[in-house]
Structure formats: structure tokens, C-alpha cells
Length: 141
Ligand SMILES: Cc1cc2nc3c(=O)[nH]c(=O)nc-3n(C[C@H](O)[C@H](O)[C@H](O)COP(=O)(O)O)c2cc1C
Image (cartoon, rainbow, N blue to C red; front, side, top):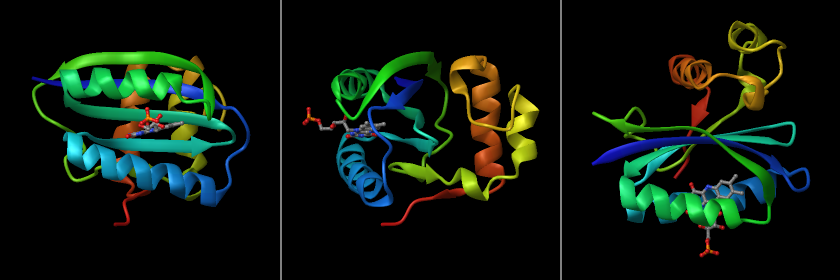
């Protein structure tokens, strides 16, 4: 049975490109092995991640993620059963918000700045759909 989990968190310290690349590399290798797919957004010290996969696999990964000291205030935004995956092609895609039209953020948030803590789960999901539609997600290797 497939589930989708979305959470937001705050980075313990600002992440540079190298630290983010290390995080993504580890995530992709583990996720590919565990049958987990999804997208991670990092912008201005805020993480927003969508993970989808088998219920046991997602619950186990979320437990590890919550304990990770690279971030805090890990806040569950949504947890749903899924008929099908949205991100089947991505072991962990990375969305680059600097390539995103600020109008898209304004469409779903109060300001043109990523603030998932102040967004409804539906708005966050719609934002993920826009990220896919506007092709700002990359998944090297
Ligand atoms: C924002 C964020 C997102 C993460 N996403 C994933 C992920 O999708 N898959 C993964 O295996 N690890 C991810 N991690 C890393 C895990 O938290 C953890 O460090 C990793 O699974 C190794 O766990 P272990 O030290 O308990 O073996 C993420 C960490 C952070 C801070």
C-alpha cells in the first residue's frame, strides 16, 4: 500500500550547495533501495519534502529524518494513502526555487517566499504540482 508524507522543517544552519549535494546523494541511494520517491525543496533555510512509497518504508524513513540534527521544527503537513505515485521517476528530485516564477509562490502563499508552515496541505500539494509542471525539479544521477 502506497502512502505520501509531506513535512516542512528549518535547517539547523544555512546549507551550502556542497552540504545539500551530500544530503541528496545519501537520500537518493537509500530511497532507490527502499522504493521511495519524492521531491525536496530547500530555500532560505527551509526544507519542504514530499516522500511517497510503501507505508512501512515511509514511516521508517520519516523517523530517521525527524532525528536528523541538520534540521529542527520538523512539522508534518500531510499523510495520505495513494492510488498512484506522482513522482515515480525521482528517487529524490530537487526543486530549485530560484528558477521558479515568484508568481507561483504568490499563487499559494501570503508572500512570494517559501513558507510551508503557513500553507494548507492542499496548497502545498498544488505547489508541488506546479514544480513538476514548470520543470524546476532536477534529479541528476
Ligand atoms: C531535510 C532532509 C531530508 C532528508 N531526506 C532523506 C531522504 O529522502 N532519504 C534518506 O534516506 N535520507 C534522507 N535524509 C537523511 C536522513 O535524515 C538520515 O540522515 C539518513 O537516512 C541516514 O540515517 P541513519 O544515520 O539513521 O542511518 C534527509 C535529511 C534531511 C535533513
